[in-house]
Length: 225
Image 1: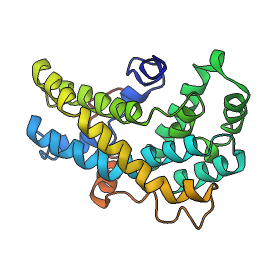
Image 2: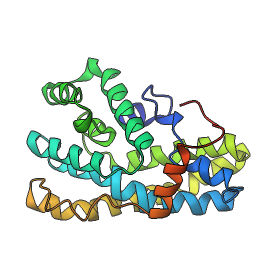
Image 3: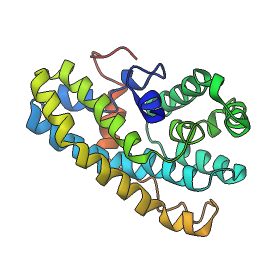
């Protein structure tokens, strides 16, 4: 039930309003129907989400309570983002998530909320991690659901086709979460975060990096941000 609360796209954290590069692909004519969207979605979830937000979430959940490691993780993760707009969106989403859940904060979540006054320590995946136990599959599926909702309006897709995509991508959510934990495994085995053991993480698909950078110069926006 907590996962349904935190990861529902109606939850007021701004997650629903950022397309994470999808608009660029639609404007280029690359994503234009359900089939091309599915191809894009699989690439995004396995090459971007799993290596960034998913891995960050897995590490933060596995090292829960280790405050210095959490701050190092946030700093490294935020520094790895090529797009200034993407980084700003993440910081805004993290703060909104923590602000709107302040009524349920324990000491650890309250500490992290205070730390998020500094932009370089403010990361949405970590914000979710301090609010409950490990819900990695639910977290991955929430991204799939948000992006499918965006595609429904933007391509557009029929509601029937969107429902079909949401169903078949239940497996993609699990594969994304599994890859996230695989990538995080060495850090979790070490039991701490350092610049050395994170250097192979958070590298994204260069083509998708370009799409997110292009997103900053779109002539039009399909979604409110």
